[in-house]
Image 1 (cartoon, rainbow, N blue to C red):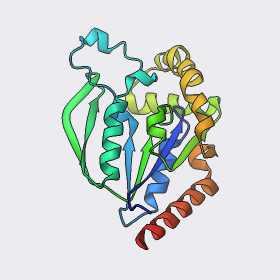
Image 2 (image 1 turned 180 degrees about the horizontal axis):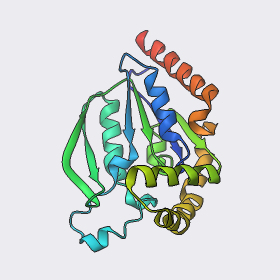
Image 3 (image 1 turned 135 degrees about the vertical axis):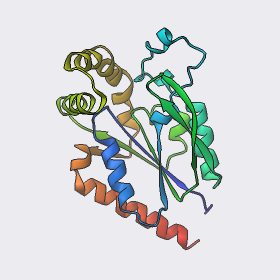
Length: 211
């Protein structure tokens, strides 16, 4: 058995609770043996585009992500090599000049709406999770978040959801559920599923410590 980090993918629609699930799992490991890599950090650099062009970006489409870079970084982490995670600046709709140094850990959790969409990424994962939450709950969570935290208006959030988020979810996100090894209904509210995931990860870490 080769001693290398284990990669876990956590996908689900916007507002499904996948970030909550990921953070709840992460909180259980005080020894810092787990790291989170957010797909949102890997939106493509758009510095060569005009601001008008950047504003047209569909952030819910697979082509919005720099999967080549995230795959490169995951492979580096699997070799226990550090990476420089990009930072995306939503105020200017392109990648920032800043980077975040990331040290390798024994467990890598990849989290994002389309983290299961690319076969190359799926092939690196030992466990694939899909957080499955009803559409009405997801839109309510998105409304609350965008209005409270991002200063959006109700009309703008609803318009974006109906014109972009929902159709992209149906076309690209929902179909990736078939690749999941584990489906977690209701996201962060599902303590049983989260506890099972934590137990599984602890078992993996114990096995690795015995190598």
